[in-house]
Image (tube, rainbow, N blue to C red):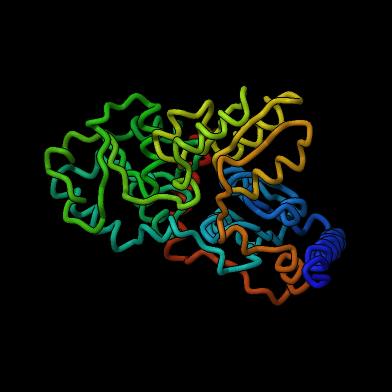
Length: 359
């Protein structure tokens, strides 16, 4: 029993020691080092970030990091490769754990997307189709979009990306997250019969030629396992247990959950809601990754901040303060993350379009 009781104490001691050492290393390197930490990172890792935010905010920070030479990105792989694409040639980007990937990003690969694009071209003129790739994707797909006049989308700029795309084409081919695409299309007021779901495993996505020709938004069959876990029963249970509670969810949730929520928005929006829109005594149940909710609850003890249900992103959770410390202590020999030169040019086009359209 004594051993069981000692475990959490030891973890807390290690965490404090790691954070102290990380801060010491940051002080030694000064402005030449910049640590970026996503909202979904563990509490200790998040606390060590020089800049914290959602994927859009952090990629923008990487692009605007004028003084830093070494950029350490605490997030998943697609974020880190995007930052490496946007940084200057004299800057170096590092990832504390290269095994931190994204299952959603793996739901669309370049051969699948290329084949799907060729299928589309047999039905419609793809010059009128704007490819929109979600930030949660590999760099070769961002390059694919940039080469074809497309753009990268994030959960915080999706509406503006739709505006940008429809100013340049008649249709949007949105991948790999069907739920962000559908929720954005719904909010945009696009009729349901003009929103179709493309299954990359089937010829012509499993759609008829007429469905493709009629569609304004073509959605890839992909999803985030963290956000599709939430359902209407969870919302009803939270509201029944906490009268007056508001529900805020991420737009990667299923459309019926989004429709039933009080508010919907990116991780940046969710943080702003808790910090700036809630008053002491207010109550909120949040539908997103649990580490972010835990952090907001700890930071706002005068408010009730709870998860709809505990939904963990294991890839975001892979990076610990120990990993970050190890990276910083061995930065001079740590393998940097470099964008593939064949992909970087057009990937940067798509990412720059994202940054430009968001203002």
